[in-house]
Amino acid sequence: QVQLVESGGGLVQPGGSLRLSCAASGSILSISVMGWYRQAPGKQRELVATFTTGGNTNYAYSVKGRFTISRDNAKNTVHLQMNSLKPEDTAVYYCNAFISPYAYWGQGTQVTVSS
Image: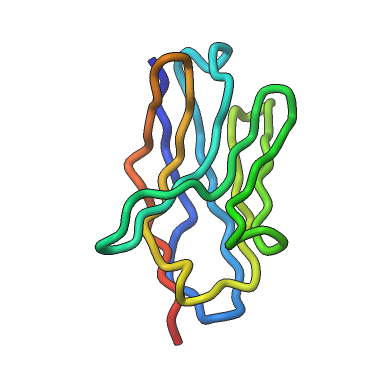
């Protein structure tokens, strides 16, 4: 079992920045992949960025060069730094942890990009 708690969402103007954080607790040593997904109204949940225990990162094409995922192993936390935000980035962002064959989700945090 893994518990995930997200923080850092909010309202930001286009071109602005936000930093999301996800604190993990429980069976964290068994996690093979952690990452962020998002779901906009009326759309399916989609991958934003992932980070493997081997240090490999993967980004959605739409956020490459603007978003950066990182891990703080000492604090069991994953961050998502989001720069140059666009209105189309508006969504609920979910933290995800994968321990084969199960996926664990946080409660989600709203990110709204609007002027």
